[in-house]
Length: 278
Ligand SMILES: Nc1ncnc2c1ncn2[C@@H]1O[C@H](COP(=O)(O)OP(=O)(O)OP(=O)(O)O)[C@@H](O)[C@H]1O
Ligand SMILES: [Mg+2]
Image (tube, rainbow, N blue to C red; front, side, top):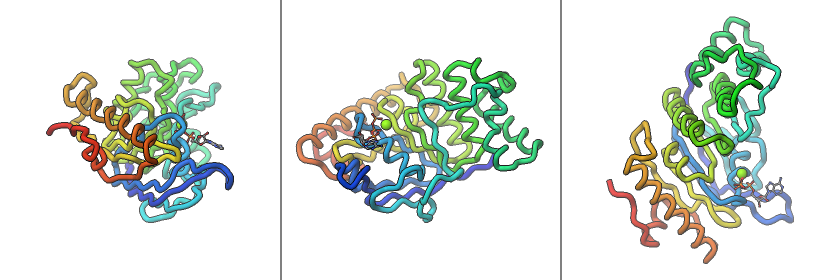
């Protein structure tokens, strides 16, 4: 499978659901390099899912610019694929057929389809389950099938809206590690939304802290840690504490004065939060 990433460029993005409803978010600016992994963290209701749906082309923004490789996003595309909390599989079909469904509708020949599907199933470590019906698999295995179904399309960007939140801690940890390593191996971008600070530390190249109402990106923090990342590693713990402090500070500041979008780390320095050493 050959996948390349995409240059994501969002400028002054604004959204409200109806002309009379309040702004969901305001002045959002995000840029990402090809292959970069962004994790957006923020409290419930600050507009994370709305932002992700707009990036996926599933929802139209009220204002601002959204470009992928300099092309305006006008709707959904197989170049960027969204994964949700529930895997939404066809329960009566085997793993292999679920994974191949997109290629089947795209008119792929049987041989080509079989090879590509086998490759994707292998990437998510489900080789032994290819012929099983998905309803006989665990929740984590079903989420792996959904991941393989996304990967066969060779997306340039994978968008994930809290995809592991329904899973137990062990399954979640394995999927966090595997999704990050597959994205790095194949080179596609990740944009992921989560409430979970640990997940952000384990998966992000950059963590974006979103807060307020209307939501804004308050911080853009580089999560510069080596792979594979281990929860118990002191550097990981230190970054976790830093993100948590920054997040809480952003929420408090937003409550105070409405806040504005800032460049990397500047707000934390202004507010005296210590940055991680090294
Ligand atoms: N279809 C809709 N019509 C009108 N308002 C909506 C719609 N969907 C979401 N909203 C509102 O927009 C705001 C942002 O919602 P969104 O789902 O993006 O938040 P979120 O950050 O993803 O929250 P959570 O963490 O709980 O998933 C909320 O106030 C929500 O009530
Ligand atoms: Mg949401």
